Image (cartoon, rainbow over all chains, first blue to last red; front, side, top):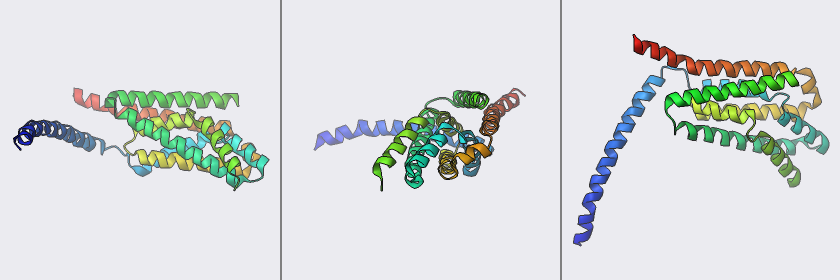
Length: 133
Length: 98
């Protein structure tokens, strides 16, 4: 009966230390989010900009051509579209998940530079395929 | 239900899209945005609409819409987004100096 009580004390002090550091990070986050609320970055802003750019980038792309060919060959465009849709939802989910995971591991400044670099790489790829096609 | 056709179309599109520019864009946009859910929904709707047009319209769509022009517009959009991500930071830096 005595042992559990003795064990409990160091655990308590540990948890107190944890909660203090957690509190620090929470207050940091709230300051950060207050600063970032000034920027227009809501759901619809993210939705609109992502939709427009990816839709334009995907028009006439190899995925669309593959879907086109498969549906023309098989004469059942519904099933081909269902398969393509499942694949596209999966790759989008993977992409967003990877992006969030990477963004949570680096500092805001590093994240901004990395995001801008990736976007510039994507636009170079797009310009390259626009010229060759 | 033709499960084989479903599987083939899933695998083909999945392998084509894995690591492709729209997935890189999704990684970048979700990393830079405060609303990853908005990025995910926008990406899914855009990709579904593009492949739906591909499945329905057939070859007509590729001929009517100049793909290279649309890609160039998208590229400009991504460049603008990259610049807006870098822009506010330099502004904050200037404010800090004042």
